[in-house]
Length: 383
Image (tube, rainbow, N blue to C red; front, side, top):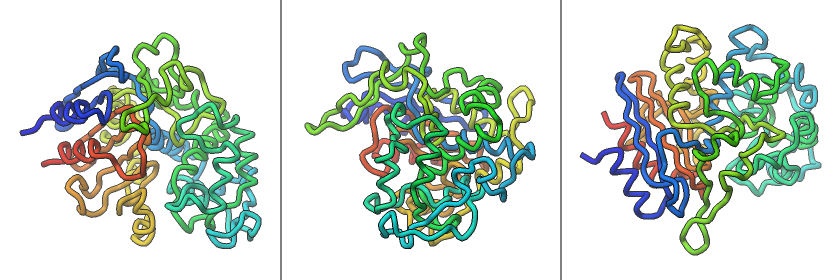
């Protein structure tokens, strides 16, 4: 039978990725494999504790942090976010998704907390990036997934976003990414703490996630991987060096994709979800009800079908996708998790206790998962 190491080595050897770290945990047993190098030059071998830009694997962590505030009664799912984010208290909406940005109507209701958690605020990326109301998200420096130093500090970020019309009415349609950034901004306003401080104190420190944060301190740069993209000659070209954009704190800590982490750190978070919100030493961080909401599909079939470019028919929980039908070999109903545009993926299956994490360092060229990811899923979701 093909092993996890064999699968990773096949894709490293063919030059698809310089290296990969895979971790699979089930039934109290954990297998972790590191193959290849942190760089295309082959000077630094990957290790289990290598640090990667996890991109959108940030989303489940931030959703969990927001649910902590819900558990504490400091905010409710039905609350209008305008209470804490007054910049978004009275948004406008383009008359139709393809309308010019100045052809707007008032929102028919406020944006709520659950709209943020289900990515249905009206802000975000649709399958068609050419729509006029999508362009300002980039031109205003609001979204720069692999350039964390571009977006401005949270107050200015929200001020700029407030001038961009919604693509859909609140609650009407699933759109990718921006709602997770808004979750981070909301956590900071509700808690009165910068997002990095809140996450460190309430989630990372209790779980021992020492290598997770929005930048890599100088003392750990020797374990940080380079970030690559496919080059025009079919090879890989450097997109960000270890001492590049993630070597210092960003002005805007992106709740949608700004974190760095390791396989074992993300595994610690996964174990929290699989243990109904308690740490190994018995400390409760999240309620079982919060985890059930996070890992339950909230999207009806028409929205799943309309967003196949991102979801491939999957549903959406809070911060991650939820498999709802076994339409592919790796699709297990109830599997929760997500993928990151820097070549990362992580999922759990609450019914079986499975956790599967794959970290690589090559940017995705489309929303469709690359072959390595699909091979990893097929291997790890076998009975």
